[in-house]
Image (cartoon, rainbow, N blue to C red; front, side, top):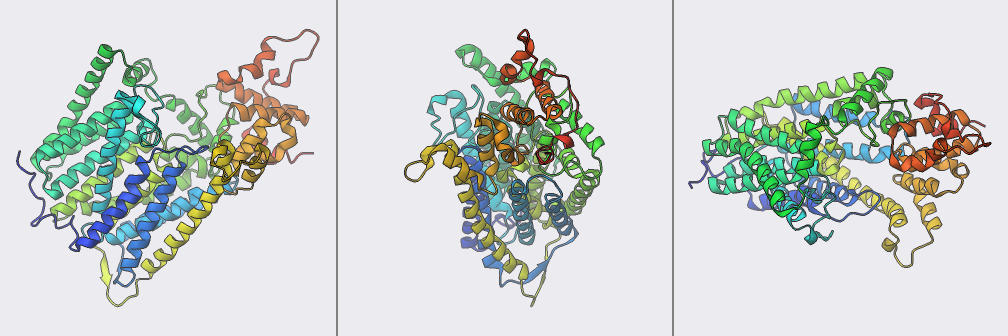
Length: 602
């Protein structure tokens, strides 16, 4: 088949930097920052994605540092209104992290991630689209590489799961379903759809043949089928719509993009036939049954309804950043979903419930202003730059849709690439104006920020190690200390000490003796074990009203793990009073059940 037509007057004038060494360095750094974090399968409890997110932060900080060193003596440039609006939105989000009563140690990492995102967006905006040291094209190459590698991982996890060893390919968490090395099928599907968009842009820029692009889109689309992700299906539909509507794309590329949707459905049908013929399970069958039997959003409708109720109760200031799980878990909701949610699974709702409606409107308004102002990048006369910009805009739209259903941007390996994309797009039109003779203080300041960030990452790694050895003594250097000592050491961690607190309170024979350890862990993720321990601690202290309220909230979850806790209520012993958990529901509000409030009482 013939090659795809070139989108510029020369061989990818916007995509290929004039300095070959700069292009190679930028691509290598992009692979380190974007591709590597999502293909590493190693998981170190208690946070399954800790290594992936740490690698993402490390790679992005190194990339920013190298870029800033290159740019420190170049002419300073002025960003336009879209860049200013984007950065202001990130600054407001940063401020929102400190507008909360949740433990500050648990807000440090989100706040740091937002600072890195702002730095990445600023640098990407200065690099623009098409410059020698632009972040845009290397980012696309890295995403395509990550998606293609993840396609191999997906195939192994579904067809030969015995090959998954946890060192090169993560163990599949559900039979017949690809989860990638991020161990989350919806995240994998978004990465694969990003890969489809990157494939289109790179193929046009590099003048690859239509057959080569078609083979990539076929593999990536089939891998989306293997995730059995309904979010992924929406992404493929968006890809087909982009191909149908964008008349500036080469005709062959458009046809291949439109064909992705029927290929998806043929692939789904093929997997059903494979499952029927071999007897192997395909998770997509289960997804179809759930959808047809009235659960198209996996209980999201109920968590959204609960979240709207919380917003109505706290419209101006919200419940506080990092406090959603606690407030939702401790607020009476007889119709709550049975899963333990630490997020509302919708980005606008999350902003509103945690920080208030005015805050959410301000942030979303600034982002809307930024992206509306950046629309000129999509219509640039330079075709190669315009196609790169439209690919980036599409990928931002995909992750935005995903953010209406889940929270991918709460993970560094999605947040940082999205920040780079947003910066590239907002800085892509018009080209940044260079002010000759002005010292580039921004680049030099970025050097300091990146260097401090790398030092902070080492400190965070040390903090995490203190907690990780609690759950995996084999990580200890030398002989592992006794469990009690490891827990005590972990509790000294500012950032991750809540995991050690969880171990302390759930293992205590008498939870009321360790009430000081409830303060942090209660704000992380309340589950059955923690709520049982919390209720028992309150009862031991004679705070019966509060204890019965916590027990009533746990009963609403209808979790099988709580059966033994409520069993005495179903089988009372004659002549003995019923335990506190069998009493009526006092219906106390979440504010009255905060650990810092109830344990402050004498």
